[in-house]
Length: 123
Image (cartoon, rainbow, N blue to C red; front, top):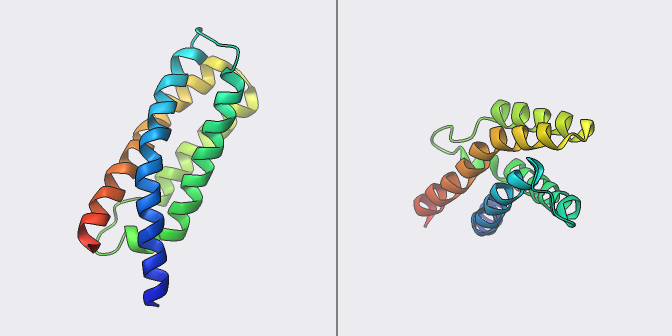
């Protein structure tokens, strides 16, 4: 059991470091999707979506640790936000994707804060 906890702590550490870059990338792509499109916007967006999916996978595997003692992340909020983003991505309309990313951004900013908080508690 302790081995799983150690792995979860390590995963949260990686999430914390990665999250800063992901949030910065999300902020950077929003203006591109709002009309300042670049040659590599589609590739950049694909990488961001892969990052979002990766963070969600890490969160799913560490939810027990993250919510230990108190509920810091609510799965329903994540699911709702990701569902809206998925629908926007399916529609392939830049403006809708940008709007959805703006709504999703606070959820991911919170992941970084939560990861930092949890790491302080477990160390």
